[in-house]
Length: 449
Image (tube, rainbow, N blue to C red):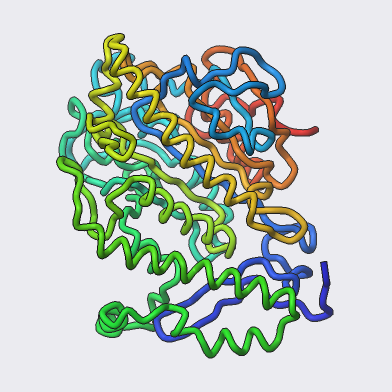
């Protein structure tokens, strides 16, 4: 790695009218990488991917603890990145359970997952929950980046109404909670996410913004002057990195434009924002590509993605399943329905594994983006048929900058709070809350030391 005498500030943007494009980690930034205690060392990122309606655990859980061997059917897509993941068994989200309030498991599952607190039963505006783990982190490290956190979802987020036995839709559709009463609705429209990452909210008027979109001008056109200046001041290696990065931004922009043209095909019964690709795999790809860019350019270091809202009835026609996901999980042992649930679980896993491979292929200094991250993939339910909230499906990907010892399956004592995992993840971000919800400590066995 070439270290220049005069470092380029890490928080450098290519700016133009209505655009502010953050840059990836360049060699010329090495001595001054923001937020790192060690010069030249990239920061650690954290993300949570939430899967709705549970997973068929028969084809998820490895047979024994220790190094990962042959992966179960649902996890087979992770074979190329097997040494970059950990499987954690026996974690519990206790407040998702009925306890003394009865039905409403889907309403509680997502809400309690990252907060670890009791979910106040209401279908009105008097919500009461707790601060989610991602926002505990964002409150400490969020000021170091353009966006304190990023919330993404693959279903349009309803915020009102009764979605599950007296529990507000806000509980089922939101993973992130800034305060006890304020959820952070995920962005589900590709154009809105793109503008959130690359738009300059101050410089461009609504009229100018509308004209630019109508003319299909690339956001790169708006920063062309800054781009030329930057290319003239950095070395050959950084020019190549910059060109590759801006090419990725342009490819995403073209994906967004195609989605807006094709998004008129709507899945019957599903609420979708305008501009969503008709096929789910295309939708997942475009949104996660932007999440990758957000991490690569250090736009944010904390993100969440809801693959679906809890209780999602999405169908997956692209893999031959026209049935709704949630109804299928109430299979009552029906082998045909069970097979379809397993296929949906494996489909989600394949898409996530492809995202991880892209993260690993994205170089960052002497490492790669996956090694500099820790990404939790899981659900607040295990068995969707009977609504169990223990023995949760939980996967951690990435090495957190060398702090996690991956490639293993760890079995914890039954009833270990899943919030213990989240508290441990935050510790690797140098965020040390006293507790997260019902956490009782940190998880042992994750680290190299």
